[in-house]
Structures are given as structure tokens and as C-alpha cells.
Length: 257
Image 1 (cartoon, rainbow, N blue to C red):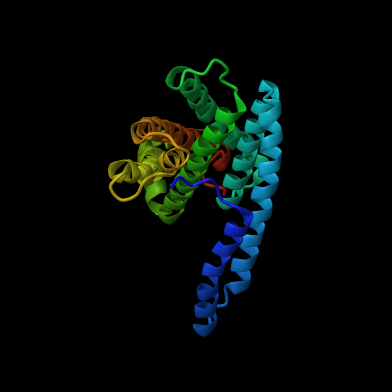
Image 2 (image 1 turned 90 degrees about the horizontal axis):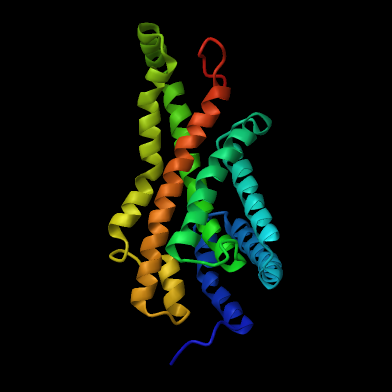
């Protein structure tokens, strides 16, 4: 029997499965029940509002509006990355904005035009969902990359200054930390690509199969999106360091963040 969608009553019934979790938390004196209620309530409100908003955008399907919403998503990702990495927002928002904007927009438009052959590459039903997948992965990658890069320098401050005194070239010294930060950023994606289909069926593939697509079609889309995610995440992480490093050190090459 083919599923015909999820009714509101069916969704409500799913919340009953949370009750055992709440009971166990209470018994174990784990004081996270309020937090669980809060995040679930917030998720429902946020996704409901986003769903209404996206439906309006999809109905209008105006290229300018679609791209403007994508830029808004990138701006939010930039603020989130700066906040999560404890970077001064006023100082680092522009570098991070371009670190997200350049690779994600280039990969997204290339994907829409050359891979799935859209006549309208700014079509809302493709631009926003695929852009969201690329951005979400780039956000995670950038946070890992930035945190690891600057944390490594702070933790190895004596080593950093030692090699700096020997070479006198900050770029040469930072290259070691740079390479490790980039690898740490893409390591989760590499692991996902390596085990995809064996450990779990990924979201895009599962969604297409549930939507009625044949498995081979879903697989082709999933392969394409995973490669796109890897490329966008890699270059976004790379640019996040290249663009922020100019604002993170003073004239004496001392880390100031």
C-alpha cells in the first residue's frame, strides 16, 4: 500500500513516543525535559512558518525573490558561523559572508544548469532546497574548520612563535594549521561518502523514494548532491580561513581573537 502523506493526527500521534523519554529523564534526574519541550515547540513553529513562506515563494517563483531568499539564508549562516566560533560579528561577518556566498552559489548554479539541466536555474523548487543542503553542510564544515584552525594556534602558541621567528613568514607557519583545519572540516563528509548506502540511506535519496521515484533515479540524484556538498564544503572552509585570517592577527602577527 502506498503512503498518501502524513495527516496532522498522525503527526500528533508521533509525539506519544516522546513520553517514555520524558519519564526516563525524570527517573534519572536528567533535567532536560523543559529543553526538549522548548526545542520541539520551536521546531514546529519555525518549520510551519517556513513552510507557509516557502509555499508563497514557490507559487510566485520569481527569480529575484528566489535568489534574494538564498542570499538571506547565506547571511544567516554567516552570522551563525561567527557566533558559534566566538568571532566578533561586526569584524568577521563580511569575510564569512563571501566565504559562504562564492562557493555555494557557484556550485548551486552549476548543479542546476549542468547536472539537472534546468531551463530556469533560479527555480524556487530547486534553488532553495538544494541551496539549503549545500549551506547546511558548509555551515557545519566552516564551524569545524575555523574553530580547529584558531584553537590549534592558541594551544600551540609557543610553537607558532618559534617557527615564526625562524622563518619570518606567517603564511608558511600557518600552512600547517591550515591544512589540518581543512581536513578536519571535510573528514565527516568523506566518511559519509565512504559509507553511504551501507550504513544509512541519505535524506535526499530517501525523500525521493518516499515521493515515488524509482531507486536508480534517487541514487543518481544522491550521488550528484553528495559531490556538490563536498565541493561546496571544501571551498567554503578554505575561503573562511583565507578571508578571516587577515582580520585575526595584529601587525605583529599575534592572534587577537
